[in-house]
Image 1 (cartoon, rainbow, N blue to C red):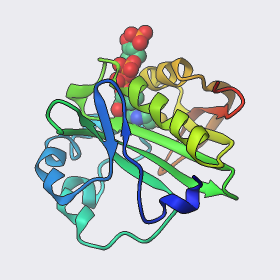
Image 2: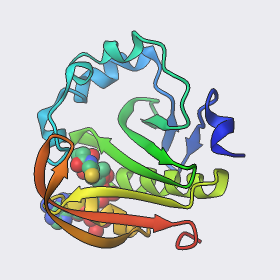
Image 3: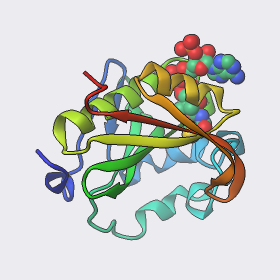
Amino acid sequence: MSLEDYIHNKPVIETGRLILRPLVSSDIMALKEWMPDKSVYTYWGKGPGKSEKNPELLFEKEEKPTKSFHLGIAEKVSDNVIGDIWVYLIENDRMAQIAIRLSKLAQGIGYGTEALSAMTRFCFENTELKRLWTKVDIRNIASCKILEKCGYTKEGLIRQGKMVNTWCDYYIYGVLDSDFV
Ligand SMILES: CC(C)(COP(=O)(O)OP(=O)(O)OC[C@H]1O[C@@H](n2cnc3c(N)ncnc32)[C@H](O)[C@@H]1OP(=O)(O)O)[C@@H](O)C(=O)NCCC(=O)NCCS
């Protein structure tokens, strides 16, 4: 399989406790429970935007065909969406950025590690991507911890760089397909 194969058919990825799957309009109620919560965005570089405050807006426009992934993270037992994960800004089908967020209630119980690890493995085993990377505010300890647990290397520190709409000290974390065996 390659990124091209997932343009119209996004993957569904299963872990022990979670299913990473495309969001559907029946998820709106679940998304409303946590997407507008400001505490989720403390180190996100911006607060909740229009569609995060009103998740129904996410389903109003037809999604453009793209090689990027944006998958909901659902608890297997309930199919309740408690977070989401992206692989985006794909460059030359070789390198992409990754991002994840979870509802406050779903944090601190290992879901972040479980979802990030599954998505990272999926990208290296099922697409031609060779490098995944992300920026992390140095104060975001939970994020640093999960990245390290999933095999990402802290590659550098950027001082007072731009992270979305804010300026902060942030780390660059990256992982190569050859690291992830
Ligand atoms: C970052 C995030 C995805 C992590 O997911 P999670 O499910 O909470 O993470 P896990 O439970 O798998 O692991 C978190 C680890 O960080 C630790 N941790 C969390 N906050 C901490 C703190 N303030 N100080 C020290 N350790 C902390 C936890 O104890 C745990 O460590 P352990 O595995 O050694 O027990 C989640 O916190 C989140 O969605 N945050 C808001 C959005 C965000 O900032 N996303 C990342 C942007 S780069």
